Image 1 (cartoon, rainbow, N blue to C red):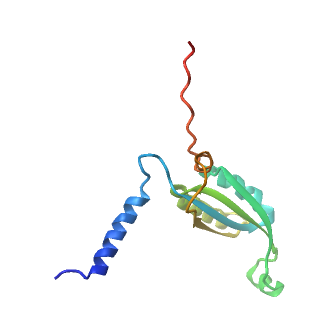
Image 2 (cartoon, helix red, strand yellow):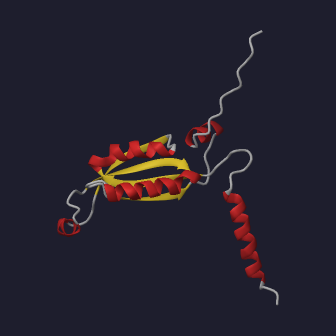
Image 3 (cartoon, one colour):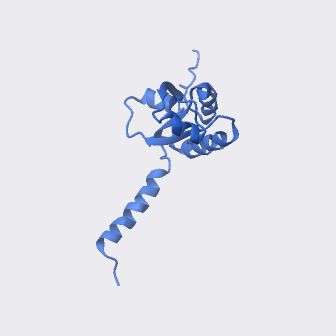
Length: 145
């Protein structure tokens, strides 16, 4: 018995998606925006930690929690001053970075936080892409004549 057309289409789409996830021979890889929300006094620590995942661009903005103080007290989150860290990294490093952050959230005293990624669909400029993906190629050395 033949599969309905929509199932065949889904099978093709899944196989196409798998082939798209592999880096192409040209070396271009997809990028993701990693958003990390942590206590403000831990922001510098987490920014330094994320650099080990080949993050070339990151910025932090100050944030303020919105929950009522009674709720924060019950959850053990008295400090409502937060930092939101935006980091750009290659897709192949994203899972590893998220797992590393999860380990740090559990291991560090008052180091709790949340983290998630958002796929980036495009970047304007080859040089900017190379910088963000940590894929800068050096020009060939010129011979002296």
